[in-house]
Image 1 (tube, rainbow, N blue to C red):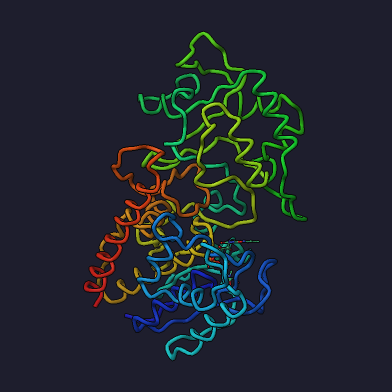
Image 2 (cartoon, rainbow, N blue to C red):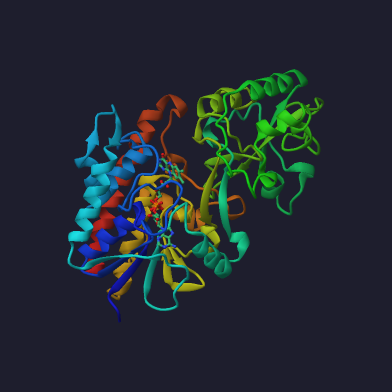
Length: 450
Ligand SMILES: Cc1cc2nc3c(=O)[nH]c(=O)nc-3n(C[C@H](O)[C@H](O)[C@H](O)COP(=O)(O)OP(=O)(O)OC[C@H]3O[C@@H](n4cnc5c(N)ncnc54)[C@H](O)[C@@H]3O)c2cc1C
Protein backbone atom coordinates (compact mmCIF):
# COMPACT_ATOMS: atom_id res chain seq x y z
CA UNK A 1 0.00 0.00 0.00
CA UNK A 2 1.21 3.50 -0.84
CA UNK A 3 2.34 5.49 2.19
CA UNK A 4 1.88 8.81 0.50
CA UNK A 5 -0.76 11.31 1.52
CA UNK A 6 -1.65 13.92 -1.09
CA UNK A 7 -2.96 17.13 0.37
CA UNK A 8 -4.72 19.59 -1.91
CA UNK A 9 -4.53 23.16 -0.58
CA UNK A 10 -1.77 24.44 1.67
CA UNK A 11 -3.87 26.74 3.83
CA UNK A 12 -4.61 26.43 7.55
CA UNK A 13 -6.04 22.92 7.38
CA UNK A 14 -3.67 21.56 4.72
CA UNK A 15 -0.52 22.84 6.43
CA UNK A 16 -1.51 21.38 9.79
CA UNK A 17 -2.44 18.07 8.15
CA UNK A 18 0.88 17.94 6.30
CA UNK A 19 2.81 18.47 9.53
CA UNK A 20 0.92 15.76 11.39
CA UNK A 21 1.27 13.26 8.54
CA UNK A 22 4.94 13.99 7.91
CA UNK A 23 5.74 13.64 11.62
CA UNK A 24 4.06 10.26 11.62
CA UNK A 25 6.44 9.19 8.84
CA UNK A 26 4.21 9.45 5.78
CA UNK A 27 5.40 10.94 2.52
CA UNK A 28 3.38 14.06 1.95
CA UNK A 29 2.73 15.92 -1.28
CA UNK A 30 1.09 19.31 -0.88
CA UNK A 31 -0.59 20.48 -4.09
CA UNK A 32 -1.08 24.24 -3.75
CA UNK A 33 -2.34 26.31 -6.67
CA UNK A 34 -0.97 29.64 -5.44
CA UNK A 35 0.89 31.61 -6.67
CA UNK A 36 0.14 30.22 -10.17
CA UNK A 37 -3.62 30.48 -9.66
CA UNK A 38 -4.74 33.25 -7.34
CA UNK A 39 -7.80 33.88 -5.19
CA UNK A 40 -9.32 37.30 -4.51
CA UNK A 41 -8.35 37.12 -0.81
CA UNK A 42 -4.85 35.58 -0.73
CA UNK A 43 -1.89 37.85 -1.54
CA UNK A 44 1.16 35.58 -1.34
CA UNK A 45 2.32 32.16 -2.43
CA UNK A 46 3.04 31.13 1.17
CA UNK A 47 1.44 28.29 3.05
CA UNK A 48 -1.06 29.07 5.82
CA UNK A 49 -1.74 32.62 4.74
CA UNK A 50 -4.19 34.47 7.00
CA UNK A 51 -6.58 36.07 4.53
CA UNK A 52 -8.19 38.67 6.77
CA UNK A 53 -8.00 39.34 10.52
CA UNK A 54 -4.84 38.31 12.34
CA UNK A 55 -6.67 36.86 15.33
CA UNK A 56 -7.04 33.31 16.57
CA UNK A 57 -9.66 34.73 19.00
CA UNK A 58 -9.75 33.91 22.73
CA UNK A 59 -6.86 31.97 24.21
CA UNK A 60 -8.75 31.20 27.42
CA UNK A 61 -8.85 27.40 27.62
CA UNK A 62 -11.02 27.40 30.77
CA UNK A 63 -13.91 29.64 29.75
CA UNK A 64 -13.94 29.72 25.98
CA UNK A 65 -14.52 26.99 23.40
CA UNK A 66 -11.99 28.29 20.86
CA UNK A 67 -9.43 28.74 23.65
CA UNK A 68 -10.06 25.11 24.52
CA UNK A 69 -9.49 24.16 20.88
CA UNK A 70 -6.10 25.97 21.05
CA UNK A 71 -5.24 23.88 24.10
CA UNK A 72 -6.26 20.62 22.49
CA UNK A 73 -4.23 21.41 19.37
CA UNK A 74 -1.15 22.29 21.41
CA UNK A 75 -1.46 18.94 23.19
CA UNK A 76 -1.43 17.28 19.76
CA UNK A 77 1.78 19.04 18.72
CA UNK A 78 0.09 21.43 16.28
CA UNK A 79 2.35 23.34 13.90
CA UNK A 80 -0.24 26.08 13.39
CA UNK A 81 -0.42 26.67 17.16
CA UNK A 82 3.36 26.53 17.56
CA UNK A 83 3.77 29.14 14.81
CA UNK A 84 1.01 31.31 16.31
CA UNK A 85 2.59 31.10 19.77
CA UNK A 86 6.01 31.98 18.39
CA UNK A 87 4.68 35.01 16.51
CA UNK A 88 2.13 36.13 19.03
CA UNK A 89 1.28 39.85 19.34
CA UNK A 90 -0.03 41.54 22.49
CA UNK A 91 -3.85 41.41 22.38
CA UNK A 92 -5.21 40.95 25.92
CA UNK A 93 -6.85 37.56 26.26
CA UNK A 94 -6.87 36.96 22.51
CA UNK A 95 -4.21 35.21 20.47
CA UNK A 96 -3.23 37.73 17.80
CA UNK A 97 -0.59 36.73 15.32
CA UNK A 98 2.06 38.56 13.30
CA UNK A 99 0.79 37.21 9.98
CA UNK A 100 3.89 37.47 7.74
CA UNK A 101 6.39 35.66 9.99
CA UNK A 102 3.62 33.25 10.98
CA UNK A 103 3.05 31.96 7.46
CA UNK A 104 6.77 32.15 6.67
CA UNK A 105 7.41 29.94 9.70
CA UNK A 106 4.84 27.37 8.55
CA UNK A 107 6.18 27.46 4.98
CA UNK A 108 9.84 27.10 6.00
CA UNK A 109 9.08 24.34 8.51
CA UNK A 110 7.14 22.23 6.03
CA UNK A 111 9.50 22.80 3.09
CA UNK A 112 12.46 21.79 5.28
CA UNK A 113 11.00 18.35 6.00
CA UNK A 114 12.60 15.68 3.80
CA UNK A 115 9.33 13.78 3.38
CA UNK A 116 7.26 16.80 2.31
CA UNK A 117 7.07 17.99 -1.30
CA UNK A 118 5.21 21.11 -2.30
CA UNK A 119 3.95 21.14 -5.88
CA UNK A 120 2.61 24.40 -7.32
CA UNK A 121 -0.44 23.14 -9.16
CA UNK A 122 -4.19 23.32 -9.21
CA UNK A 123 -6.02 20.01 -8.84
CA UNK A 124 -9.27 20.00 -10.78
CA UNK A 125 -10.62 16.50 -10.20
CA UNK A 126 -11.27 14.00 -7.43
CA UNK A 127 -8.78 11.13 -7.90
CA UNK A 128 -9.91 7.52 -7.90
CA UNK A 129 -6.69 6.13 -6.43
CA UNK A 130 -4.23 6.92 -3.67
CA UNK A 131 -4.89 8.70 -0.38
CA UNK A 132 -6.07 12.27 -0.77
CA UNK A 133 -7.08 15.02 1.61
CA UNK A 134 -8.79 18.08 0.15
CA UNK A 135 -8.40 21.24 2.21
CA UNK A 136 -9.15 23.81 -0.46
CA UNK A 137 -11.04 26.20 1.77
CA UNK A 138 -13.77 28.78 1.23
CA UNK A 139 -12.22 29.84 -2.09
CA UNK A 140 -11.90 26.39 -3.62
CA UNK A 141 -11.02 26.94 -7.28
CA UNK A 142 -14.04 26.95 -9.63
CA UNK A 143 -12.82 23.93 -11.65
CA UNK A 144 -12.46 21.81 -8.53
CA UNK A 145 -15.79 23.13 -7.23
CA UNK A 146 -17.43 21.82 -10.39
CA UNK A 147 -15.79 18.42 -9.91
CA UNK A 148 -17.03 18.23 -6.31
CA UNK A 149 -20.53 19.25 -7.40
CA UNK A 150 -20.50 16.55 -10.12
CA UNK A 151 -19.55 13.95 -7.52
CA UNK A 152 -21.88 15.03 -4.73
CA UNK A 153 -24.80 16.62 -6.59
CA UNK A 154 -24.93 20.35 -7.21
CA UNK A 155 -27.34 20.97 -4.34
CA UNK A 156 -24.77 19.61 -1.85
CA UNK A 157 -22.18 22.32 -2.53
CA UNK A 158 -22.82 25.94 -1.62
CA UNK A 159 -20.85 28.93 -2.88
CA UNK A 160 -22.08 31.41 -0.29
CA UNK A 161 -23.00 31.05 3.31
CA UNK A 162 -26.22 32.73 4.39
CA UNK A 163 -26.06 32.43 8.10
CA UNK A 164 -29.02 33.13 10.30
CA UNK A 165 -28.06 33.84 13.92
CA UNK A 166 -27.89 30.85 16.25
CA UNK A 167 -29.13 31.18 19.82
CA UNK A 168 -28.27 29.05 22.85
CA UNK A 169 -31.45 27.22 23.89
CA UNK A 170 -30.81 27.94 27.58
CA UNK A 171 -30.97 31.71 26.96
CA UNK A 172 -34.47 31.68 25.40
CA UNK A 173 -37.32 32.80 27.68
CA UNK A 174 -39.77 29.89 27.54
CA UNK A 175 -42.37 31.87 29.54
CA UNK A 176 -42.83 34.00 26.40
CA UNK A 177 -41.92 31.59 23.63
CA UNK A 178 -43.89 28.43 22.81
CA UNK A 179 -43.16 25.29 20.80
CA UNK A 180 -45.37 24.65 17.76
CA UNK A 181 -44.92 23.93 14.06
CA UNK A 182 -47.02 26.02 11.70
CA UNK A 183 -50.52 24.46 11.35
CA UNK A 184 -49.33 21.77 13.79
CA UNK A 185 -47.77 19.95 10.87
CA UNK A 186 -45.90 16.73 11.54
CA UNK A 187 -46.43 13.03 12.10
CA UNK A 188 -45.04 12.94 15.63
CA UNK A 189 -45.44 15.16 18.68
CA UNK A 190 -41.78 16.11 18.31
CA UNK A 191 -42.37 17.33 14.73
CA UNK A 192 -45.55 19.18 15.71
CA UNK A 193 -43.47 21.06 18.28
CA UNK A 194 -40.34 21.47 16.17
CA UNK A 195 -40.27 25.29 16.20
CA UNK A 196 -40.08 27.85 18.98
CA UNK A 197 -42.21 30.93 18.33
CA UNK A 198 -41.55 34.48 19.50
CA UNK A 199 -44.75 36.57 19.25
CA UNK A 200 -44.82 40.31 18.47
CA UNK A 201 -47.57 42.90 18.87
CA UNK A 202 -48.06 45.55 16.17
CA UNK A 203 -46.10 48.13 18.22
CA UNK A 204 -43.24 45.70 18.81
CA UNK A 205 -43.15 44.84 15.10
CA UNK A 206 -43.08 48.50 14.02
CA UNK A 207 -40.29 49.29 16.49
CA UNK A 208 -38.37 46.24 15.26
CA UNK A 209 -38.66 47.35 11.61
CA UNK A 210 -37.49 50.87 12.54
CA UNK A 211 -34.45 49.42 14.33
CA UNK A 212 -33.67 47.13 11.40
CA UNK A 213 -33.79 49.99 8.91
CA UNK A 214 -31.59 52.20 11.10
CA UNK A 215 -29.02 49.50 12.03
CA UNK A 216 -25.37 49.61 10.89
CA UNK A 217 -24.79 47.20 8.02
CA UNK A 218 -21.76 45.74 6.30
CA UNK A 219 -21.66 46.64 2.63
CA UNK A 220 -21.62 43.95 -0.04
CA UNK A 221 -18.42 43.78 -2.11
CA UNK A 222 -18.67 44.26 -5.83
CA UNK A 223 -19.99 41.09 -7.50
CA UNK A 224 -20.69 39.47 -4.13
CA UNK A 225 -24.44 39.34 -4.60
CA UNK A 226 -24.47 37.64 -7.99
CA UNK A 227 -26.24 34.32 -8.20
CA UNK A 228 -27.41 33.84 -4.63
CA UNK A 229 -29.27 36.90 -3.67
CA UNK A 230 -32.88 36.00 -4.34
CA UNK A 231 -32.81 32.72 -2.45
CA UNK A 232 -31.69 34.29 0.81
CA UNK A 233 -32.36 37.99 1.01
CA UNK A 234 -31.04 39.63 4.15
CA UNK A 235 -33.89 40.65 6.45
CA UNK A 236 -32.91 44.32 6.34
CA UNK A 237 -33.20 44.30 2.53
CA UNK A 238 -36.64 42.71 2.84
CA UNK A 239 -37.59 45.47 5.30
CA UNK A 240 -36.35 48.10 2.83
CA UNK A 241 -38.66 46.66 0.18
CA UNK A 242 -41.68 47.41 2.37
CA UNK A 243 -42.56 47.51 6.07
CA UNK A 244 -44.93 44.54 5.66
CA UNK A 245 -42.58 42.33 3.64
CA UNK A 246 -41.19 40.45 6.65
CA UNK A 247 -44.70 39.91 8.04
CA UNK A 248 -45.52 38.10 4.80
CA UNK A 249 -42.17 36.30 4.76
CA UNK A 250 -40.13 34.82 7.62
CA UNK A 251 -42.19 36.64 10.28
CA UNK A 252 -45.66 35.61 9.14
CA UNK A 253 -47.91 34.82 12.12
CA UNK A 254 -50.31 32.37 10.41
CA UNK A 255 -51.03 28.83 11.60
CA UNK A 256 -49.76 29.50 15.13
CA UNK A 257 -51.55 29.84 18.48
CA UNK A 258 -49.74 31.32 21.45
CA UNK A 259 -49.78 28.59 24.13
CA UNK A 260 -49.34 31.20 26.88
CA UNK A 261 -52.09 33.53 25.57
CA UNK A 262 -54.39 31.47 23.30
CA UNK A 263 -56.83 34.39 22.80
CA UNK A 264 -54.19 36.84 21.57
CA UNK A 265 -53.28 36.72 17.89
CA UNK A 266 -49.67 37.68 17.31
CA UNK A 267 -49.09 40.42 14.72
CA UNK A 268 -45.81 38.83 13.65
CA UNK A 269 -43.81 35.79 14.79
CA UNK A 270 -40.09 35.02 14.69
CA UNK A 271 -39.53 31.28 14.46
CA UNK A 272 -36.55 29.38 15.85
CA UNK A 273 -35.66 25.92 14.63
CA UNK A 274 -33.52 23.31 16.35
CA UNK A 275 -30.02 23.40 14.87
CA UNK A 276 -28.36 20.32 16.35
CA UNK A 277 -29.25 16.86 17.55
CA UNK A 278 -28.47 17.81 21.15
CA UNK A 279 -31.17 20.51 21.10
CA UNK A 280 -28.82 23.07 22.63
CA UNK A 281 -28.83 25.45 19.63
CA UNK A 282 -31.66 27.13 17.73
CA UNK A 283 -31.43 29.12 14.52
CA UNK A 284 -33.60 32.11 13.67
CA UNK A 285 -35.46 30.94 10.58
CA UNK A 286 -34.92 33.12 7.51
CA UNK A 287 -32.93 35.70 9.48
CA UNK A 288 -29.76 35.92 7.38
CA UNK A 289 -28.40 39.43 7.71
CA UNK A 290 -25.59 41.81 6.85
CA UNK A 291 -26.09 43.89 10.00
CA UNK A 292 -22.88 44.52 11.92
CA UNK A 293 -22.44 42.24 14.93
CA UNK A 294 -23.09 44.94 17.55
CA UNK A 295 -26.29 45.98 15.77
CA UNK A 296 -27.49 42.38 15.52
CA UNK A 297 -27.36 41.76 19.25
CA UNK A 298 -29.15 45.04 19.94
CA UNK A 299 -31.89 44.53 17.35
CA UNK A 300 -32.49 40.83 18.08
CA UNK A 301 -32.87 41.44 21.80
CA UNK A 302 -36.00 43.45 20.91
CA UNK A 303 -37.68 40.16 19.98
CA UNK A 304 -39.95 38.93 22.80
CA UNK A 305 -38.39 35.87 24.40
CA UNK A 306 -34.90 36.78 23.21
CA UNK A 307 -34.29 39.73 25.56
CA UNK A 308 -31.48 37.79 27.25
CA UNK A 309 -30.42 35.73 24.27
CA UNK A 310 -26.83 34.56 23.96
CA UNK A 311 -25.71 33.88 20.43
CA UNK A 312 -23.57 30.90 19.47
CA UNK A 313 -23.01 32.77 16.23
CA UNK A 314 -24.35 35.89 14.62
CA UNK A 315 -25.68 36.15 11.09
CA UNK A 316 -23.76 36.88 7.93
CA UNK A 317 -23.56 36.38 4.18
CA UNK A 318 -20.18 35.71 2.59
CA UNK A 319 -18.48 34.14 -0.38
CA UNK A 320 -17.77 30.67 0.96
CA UNK A 321 -17.60 27.31 -0.78
CA UNK A 322 -18.66 24.51 1.54
CA UNK A 323 -20.20 21.11 1.23
CA UNK A 324 -23.14 19.52 2.98
CA UNK A 325 -20.81 17.45 5.12
CA UNK A 326 -23.46 15.82 7.34
CA UNK A 327 -24.76 13.97 4.28
CA UNK A 328 -21.48 13.55 2.37
CA UNK A 329 -18.76 12.64 4.87
CA UNK A 330 -18.45 9.67 7.18
CA UNK A 331 -17.28 10.07 10.78
CA UNK A 332 -13.65 9.90 9.61
CA UNK A 333 -14.19 12.74 7.13
CA UNK A 334 -14.08 10.43 4.09
CA UNK A 335 -16.30 11.09 1.13
CA UNK A 336 -18.94 8.35 1.37
CA UNK A 337 -18.97 7.87 -2.41
CA UNK A 338 -15.15 7.85 -2.72
CA UNK A 339 -13.50 6.79 0.54
CA UNK A 340 -9.94 7.34 -0.72
CA UNK A 341 -10.75 11.05 -0.56
CA UNK A 342 -11.05 13.01 2.67
CA UNK A 343 -12.05 16.63 3.21
CA UNK A 344 -11.12 19.00 6.03
CA UNK A 345 -11.06 22.70 6.84
CA UNK A 346 -13.52 25.38 5.96
CA UNK A 347 -14.81 23.54 2.87
CA UNK A 348 -16.38 21.01 5.27
CA UNK A 349 -18.47 23.69 6.97
CA UNK A 350 -16.41 24.70 9.95
CA UNK A 351 -15.64 28.38 10.18
CA UNK A 352 -12.42 30.14 11.13
CA UNK A 353 -8.66 29.73 11.02
CA UNK A 354 -8.45 27.64 14.19
CA UNK A 355 -11.42 25.38 13.48
CA UNK A 356 -10.09 24.74 9.96
CA UNK A 357 -6.60 23.88 11.17
CA UNK A 358 -8.11 21.66 13.88
CA UNK A 359 -10.08 19.66 11.34
CA UNK A 360 -6.91 19.32 9.23
CA UNK A 361 -5.15 17.89 12.27
CA UNK A 362 -7.89 15.35 12.88
CA UNK A 363 -8.27 14.32 9.22
CA UNK A 364 -4.51 13.72 9.01
CA UNK A 365 -4.64 11.52 12.10
CA UNK A 366 -7.48 9.48 10.60
CA UNK A 367 -5.44 9.09 7.39
CA UNK A 368 -2.26 8.15 9.30
CA UNK A 369 -4.14 5.43 11.18
CA UNK A 370 -5.74 4.12 7.99
CA UNK A 371 -2.38 3.93 6.22
CA UNK A 372 -0.98 2.05 9.22
CA UNK A 373 -3.82 -0.44 8.99
CA UNK A 374 -5.23 0.75 12.31
CA UNK A 375 -8.39 2.56 13.25
CA UNK A 376 -8.78 5.33 15.77
CA UNK A 377 -11.30 5.29 18.57
CA UNK A 378 -14.10 7.84 18.01
CA UNK A 379 -13.14 11.35 19.12
CA UNK A 380 -15.25 12.08 22.23
CA UNK A 381 -17.84 14.76 21.47
CA UNK A 382 -17.09 16.20 24.91
CA UNK A 383 -13.85 17.65 23.47
CA UNK A 384 -13.73 20.72 21.22
CA UNK A 385 -12.25 18.61 18.41
CA UNK A 386 -14.88 15.93 18.85
CA UNK A 387 -17.77 18.39 19.18
CA UNK A 388 -16.80 20.03 15.88
CA UNK A 389 -16.22 16.84 13.90
CA UNK A 390 -19.41 15.31 15.28
CA UNK A 391 -21.33 18.41 14.26
CA UNK A 392 -20.14 18.46 10.66
CA UNK A 393 -20.33 14.72 10.08
CA UNK A 394 -23.83 14.17 11.39
CA UNK A 395 -24.77 16.18 14.49
CA UNK A 396 -25.90 19.23 12.51
CA UNK A 397 -29.26 19.50 10.80
CA UNK A 398 -28.35 18.68 7.17
CA UNK A 399 -31.20 20.66 5.58
CA UNK A 400 -30.10 23.94 7.10
CA UNK A 401 -26.39 23.20 7.39
CA UNK A 402 -24.27 26.38 7.45
CA UNK A 403 -20.66 26.94 8.53
CA UNK A 404 -20.08 26.82 12.27
CA UNK A 405 -17.52 28.12 14.77
CA UNK A 406 -16.68 25.99 17.79
CA UNK A 407 -18.94 26.87 20.75
CA UNK A 408 -20.18 25.20 23.92
CA UNK A 409 -23.61 24.63 22.33
CA UNK A 410 -21.99 21.81 20.33
CA UNK A 411 -21.00 19.94 23.50
CA UNK A 412 -23.24 17.54 25.42
CA UNK A 413 -24.52 19.54 28.42
CA UNK A 414 -22.79 19.24 31.78
CA UNK A 415 -25.03 18.69 34.75
CA UNK A 416 -24.55 21.70 36.99
CA UNK A 417 -27.25 23.48 38.95
CA UNK A 418 -27.53 27.25 39.02
CA UNK A 419 -28.47 28.22 35.45
CA UNK A 420 -27.09 31.42 33.93
CA UNK A 421 -25.67 32.70 37.22
CA UNK A 422 -23.31 29.80 37.32
CA UNK A 423 -21.98 30.13 33.80
CA UNK A 424 -18.25 30.34 34.69
CA UNK A 425 -18.53 27.14 36.74
CA UNK A 426 -20.36 25.44 33.89
CA UNK A 427 -17.80 26.47 31.27
CA UNK A 428 -15.02 25.33 33.57
CA UNK A 429 -16.77 21.97 33.91
CA UNK A 430 -17.00 21.71 30.10
CA UNK A 431 -13.33 22.45 29.66
CA UNK A 432 -12.13 20.22 32.53
CA UNK A 433 -14.10 17.32 31.08
CA UNK A 434 -12.78 18.07 27.58
CA UNK A 435 -9.16 18.19 28.70
CA UNK A 436 -9.37 14.81 30.45
CA UNK A 437 -11.13 13.22 27.50
CA UNK A 438 -8.74 14.71 24.94
CA UNK A 439 -5.67 13.53 26.88
CA UNK A 440 -7.16 10.04 27.05
CA UNK A 441 -8.03 10.05 23.38
CA UNK A 442 -4.53 11.15 22.39
CA UNK A 443 -2.99 8.42 24.51
CA UNK A 444 -5.41 5.78 23.22
CA UNK A 445 -5.04 6.75 19.59
CA UNK A 446 -1.24 6.86 19.78
CA UNK A 447 -1.19 3.26 21.03
CA UNK A 448 -3.49 2.05 18.28
CA UNK A 449 -1.59 3.64 15.39
CA UNK A 450 1.87 2.71 16.64
C1 LIG B 1 -12.53 37.05 2.40
C2 LIG B 1 -12.38 36.13 3.57
C3 LIG B 1 -12.12 36.63 4.83
C4 LIG B 1 -11.97 35.77 5.93
N1 LIG B 1 -11.68 36.29 7.16
C5 LIG B 1 -11.46 35.46 8.21
C6 LIG B 1 -11.05 35.97 9.49
O1 LIG B 1 -10.90 37.17 9.66
N2 LIG B 1 -10.86 35.09 10.52
C7 LIG B 1 -11.01 33.74 10.35
O2 LIG B 1 -10.81 33.00 11.32
N3 LIG B 1 -11.40 33.24 9.16
C8 LIG B 1 -11.62 34.07 8.09
N4 LIG B 1 -12.01 33.56 6.87
C9 LIG B 1 -12.21 32.16 6.75
C10 LIG B 1 -10.83 31.59 6.41
O3 LIG B 1 -10.71 31.44 5.04
C11 LIG B 1 -10.62 30.33 7.12
O4 LIG B 1 -10.74 30.59 8.46
C12 LIG B 1 -9.32 29.59 6.86
O5 LIG B 1 -8.40 30.24 6.04
C13 LIG B 1 -9.74 28.33 6.23
O6 LIG B 1 -8.68 27.45 6.22
P1 LIG B 1 -8.65 26.35 5.09
O7 LIG B 1 -7.37 25.66 5.22
O8 LIG B 1 -9.88 25.58 5.09
O9 LIG B 1 -8.64 27.24 3.73
P2 LIG B 1 -7.47 28.24 3.20
O10 LIG B 1 -6.65 28.73 4.32
O11 LIG B 1 -8.17 29.24 2.32
O12 LIG B 1 -6.60 27.27 2.32
C14 LIG B 1 -7.08 26.69 1.16
C15 LIG B 1 -5.93 26.59 0.18
O13 LIG B 1 -6.33 25.79 -0.93
C16 LIG B 1 -5.82 26.36 -2.12
N5 LIG B 1 -6.65 25.85 -3.23
C17 LIG B 1 -7.94 26.12 -3.52
N6 LIG B 1 -8.35 25.40 -4.58
C18 LIG B 1 -7.30 24.63 -4.96
C19 LIG B 1 -7.11 23.69 -6.00
N7 LIG B 1 -8.09 23.33 -6.83
N8 LIG B 1 -5.90 23.10 -6.14
C20 LIG B 1 -4.86 23.43 -5.32
N9 LIG B 1 -4.99 24.34 -4.32
C21 LIG B 1 -6.20 24.93 -4.13
C22 LIG B 1 -5.91 27.85 -1.87
O14 LIG B 1 -5.00 28.57 -2.68
C23 LIG B 1 -5.52 27.94 -0.39
O15 LIG B 1 -4.15 28.10 -0.18
C24 LIG B 1 -12.15 34.39 5.76
C25 LIG B 1 -12.43 33.88 4.49
C26 LIG B 1 -12.56 34.73 3.40
C27 LIG B 1 -12.86 34.15 2.05
